[in-house]
Length: 206
Ligand code: AP5
Image 1 (cartoon, protein in one colour):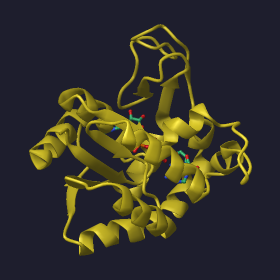
Image 2: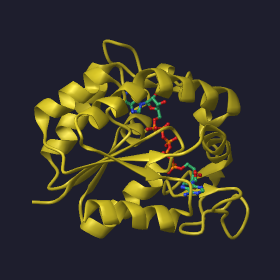
Image 3: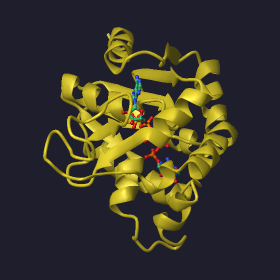
Image 4: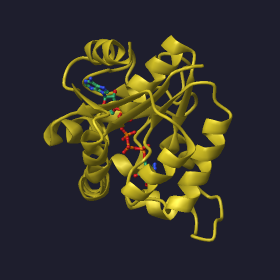
């Protein structure tokens, strides 16, 4: 059976960057509610569309994300979960549908988070991530992998990024506390190069 890894961290902590690497190294699925919701932004639900919540940096209602995660985990033989759970009720739901082998928290200071979020650029074609300062593409605005156009995510403006950090503090920090109290949480200093952070996570998983 493949590893069951949960990667926790604030917006911009590097969850997406590191989850992609972990999924590749261990041959497991990368399950990310953020990407799933972005791909289904205009889906009509009884709670409205994900778009209205995401553009404001708010959490999309639990029933919508719980369903996404349940389906994705059922189909996976090993996974790294990124962006979920984001509140205690999602954490309880997750506990009821799966068992976790590793719960890792990437710890990054707030100013560094803001710099990472506002400088992030994402390829419009293939979804590859860059940073204008920390991981610049060879040619400005152009994806190294596929030549696609690099864009800023709508919720990476400074105003919305600050709101997302506030939502994290209020809703997701209790989740981190929950796993810490259960003795399951491994805290990793996320302020190093992506390669160094990856090595730190791998040593925890193994
Ligand atoms: P989501 O897409 O999950 O966003 P997030 O949690 O805010 O996380 P990010 O993607 O911003 O950050 P990341 O930690 O993945 O960082 P990355 O690796 O890209 O969610 C978006 C929205 O969807 C939410 O606001 C909400 O509305 C909704 N949603 C999602 N899940 C939900 C849920 N469960 N419940 C309810 N609503 C939900 O790195 C960031 C940047 O830093 C990049 O540019 C990267 O190049 C750079 N970088 C990465 N690592 C390093 C490093 N070590 N050093 C320097 N730079 C680095």
